[in-house]
Structures are given as structure tokens and as C-alpha cells.
Amino acid sequence: APRAALYRELLRSETYLLTLDEPLAQGEVKRVTHADASFPVWADKDAELGGVWVPVFPARDRVREFVAARGLRAPRGKEFLWMGHMPGQVFSLLRGVRRFAGVRLYLDRESTVDLHWAEAAALAEGRLPADEPAVFELPVERLIIPAGARLSFGRLPPWPGEEKPRLLYMPEAGRIHPEDVRRLVRLPLGEGRHAWTPCRHFLQILRRLKALGADGAERFVETMLSAQISFEMYGEAEALCEWLLARGQETHGWLGLAAVYGRTRRYEDCAEICGRGAAKYPNERAFHVNGLRALIALGRRDEAARRALAATRLFPQDAVLEGLAQELAAAPSGVEAHG
Image 1: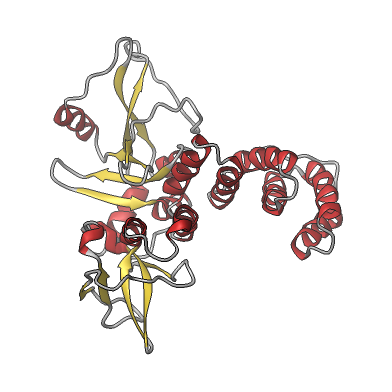
Image 2 (image 1 turned 60 degrees about the horizontal axis):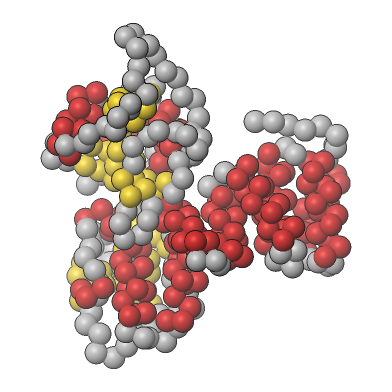
């Protein structure tokens, strides 16, 4: 169903979050202007992909109903509180939540609407997300389905440029939920034909192909991370990077996090992890490139100029690094900007 009216209402109405914090005194008001590591917002973890979905409510009564329906009990010394926000404000605040995958809007006891990271990002900037599905190209060179794997086809509602879209899914890989079809990836079928599958289901297919030992299964984690970033599933990608770090794969974990932080404009986090990465793994070019871009975005140009000099010595004739170094050389230095 079209969502433009819902998006407009979200941008002009107050919204509420559920938090778990110290009890407030009678009449006390606590203000939170940005998210940090201690931000006590309630979030639900996606058990399959690891990202977190933050419940958002259009009224205070919905918050109470949510707590009651789930039978939630606050730990000793803590209390469930609602946090009200001016129109549109909540979306900017939530983008600072770790592993943030999106918003789950609880309209009433029976109805929820999922707003993916990209939709929340648009609303944070005061823009209306598009009504038609977000579509992506295949994030891998090819996808080989083993002989004997059962595939099913269906129809999707048309959108501009796609009059009769076909849905492809692999039943044994996992279920498709109605919300999933708002984000689709094109699957070439040969002879100029193609079908679409939900991005989330594509990840389920990758997992199923790994279980079947299909070609490319040995690159499963790398492919999974690349696909999540390509599909703007940044909360899920961040969770996968943390999984890699917990298993001692520091280089890959840091590289993935640097990409996630840069694309989600978490420039402080990006600059910090790229600084550590460039110091420990100087031959990983991505740490230098992403770190410089983050420092430039933060206005820390003097620091960026020093790092650019070191990076261009390590990677002479690298066009991207040379371009960043020239950009820094052309701009006035000596002034640090702080957000």
C-alpha cells in the first residue's frame, strides 16, 4: 500500500520510544539530544541477521500497551519510561544506535510497519522515502543454483519501469514476509530475462547454498557482508563484522566496519577505526581512503593532510589517494571544525 501519507504524518507528529533507565523523580524531565554508547533505547534483535529494530510509537498509550503485551519487567533499580520526540527528530537520533537496522512502527496492538535504515535516513533528512520498492543489482558476479534445488515463481505489483515483475523464491531457504518485498534484488535468468527476490531472501538463499556446498560456499561470509552493504542493510552488516571480530578476524571485521561507518555517516567511528587499522595494517588501502574521507567530513583537515602524505607514500600513483591529497592541499589549513 502507498506510504506517502504515513511518511508525512511521521514528519509532522510527535513520536515516542521505550527506554530503560533510572527512575525519574516526580515532574523530572530528562533530555537526550544524541545517541551514544549509553543511549538506553529499547530495541529488538533480529535473531537471524543480528541487526536491531527499534520500536517507535505514535502515542504514549502504545508504549504502555507494548510493555504490557510482552510482559516486560524492568530489572531492579531501573524503570521503563517513554521518551517523546518532536516531529521527525527521532529518526536522526536512532541512526546513532549500534547495529541499527530500522524502525518498527507500532500503530496499534495489531498493526506494525517496518521502516528500513534507508527510509529512516530519508526521514531524518526531512525527505519522503519513495513509495516504490528499492531495487538493487546482483552483488556477486553470478549466483549458481544447484540442480535439483526447488524454486518457485510468483508475481509482484508493478512499479515504474517494471510492468510485470516476477518473484523468485527458494522455499527451503526461508519464508518471505510482506515487508520483505519493499527491497528487491534483480536475478538474471538468461536470454534477457530476469526475476526479483527480496534482499533478505537473497541472504537466506546464500545461507542455503552454503549448506548445500554449492560453488562459492567457501566465500560465504565475504559474499554475505558484501551483499548486506550493497543492499544498505547496514545494521545487519555491522552485526556480521562484530561476529568476525569475535572470531579473531580483525582485519576483515575492521574493514567492514569502516565501510559501514562511512556509508552511514558515522564519521567519528569511521575515523577512529581507520586510524587503528592504518597503523596496524598499513598495506590495507581501504583504511587510508575511508579514514581520509571521514576526517575531511569531520573538518579535521590538518590531521587528514598528515595522513594523506603518509598514505600517498605507501601507495604512490593511487588516483583516489592523490585526489584526496590534492583536495586537502587546495583548501585552507590550520582550522579545525568540530561538530
